[in-house]
Amino acid sequence: MPDPSPTAYDVALCVEDLRTALAEHGISLPSLRVDLAGFAGTYSPPAGLVALGNCNTATARALAAALRKTAVAER
Image 1 (spheres, rainbow, N blue to C red):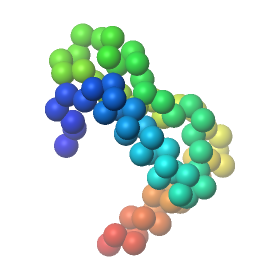
Image 2: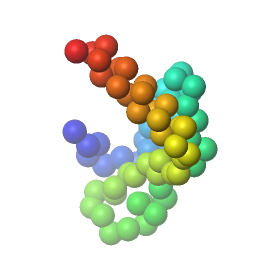
Image 3: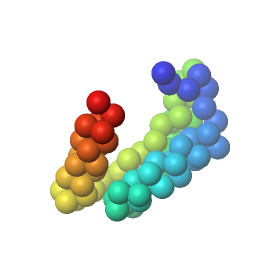
Image 4: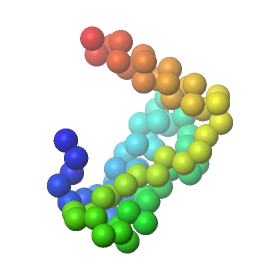
């Protein structure tokens, strides 16, 4: 369920939480950041978007593998 109305601070905390979780799997997304443009729009409530950015194929594969591993563990 989406946050009802995330603040810029809420989104920044989310980004840091995601960065930490990714790092626990040896994954780094250098472009991971708060998408400030999401707060400049006319969205009501503010969108509170996280920009995941670009990554190379090795990083994308590592992320996919970590997600698959977690999904299997949760079954």
